[in-house]
Length: 396
Image (cartoon, rainbow, N blue to C red; front, side, top):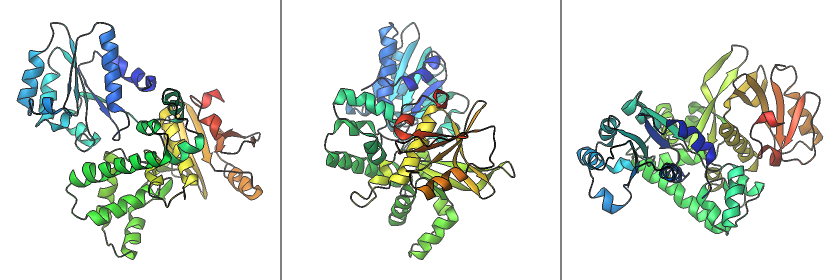
């Protein structure tokens, strides 16, 4: 596995902090690998570590509750600060109480866990003011290329648009094996992490809503429109139910939503948001064979890459004009439009016209798969293959 320095650099300043370090992210994005890499770094400089992985039966049957966990850890502490790693801790009864107690000892605590139990909003309630969390995500394309050198399974940009960046997929050379793995992963998330976790009784409705949302990535979403759609399909559901299901997906890191930013009122539009999948594979495995949704997956890929780069994102609206992303980082502001191709004259005129009369303080960018450079004096065109290798927009 590659060393994911992008995330390690964020976590290192907290190695010695008494805050609980929580590593979160969608299932199988590489949380445990990050944890292992942190532990290896500390051991390499002679720091004492203690690691418990509750996926092992020998561990989970020996330590079943908070009292047993606190007793075991404190018994094995060193005279100097010990770095304690608890993997899949959610199987321990009252694990949250144990963690709050352990952070008062002479140790530095790192925990990871399955999204079925360890969700972001729950962490806020359990550890308010006493933790720092780090969200790990599937590979971006730069990481895919790096890992491909180890596995020997090359992934093209087009592969990335279709199959996304879950690390394990890079270990399979056959596309059929990739799809099979993704379907099994998806089933674990929907059934184990969500249906079982939240005791959802209307399984059929829930799965239909999930399929609808994950096939609607890179689109404006409103609970009301989804409610009307399913009512027309003979599956009535309240707005509250739709919103609840959407929240389950967000809490499990399966989707992200961004708000629309209205320039006229200088505020966010609260009842409409745009939905993006944490990985485009969630869309692909729900499509008919080889009928890939490349246009929307492309925008979703750009979204994922911009999040990785550290940009804050919203949808930009000005009167009748809408730009896919209003990206900000510090004082830097960018208006970013995504299109599969602008080679056609009508498409070229339509996409570039969106930037007319917009804020001149923002740099304007359009990203497409075209190999020809269509840049103008006011709008920078970036080919997708080049964008995927950027550290940030300052490099252009």
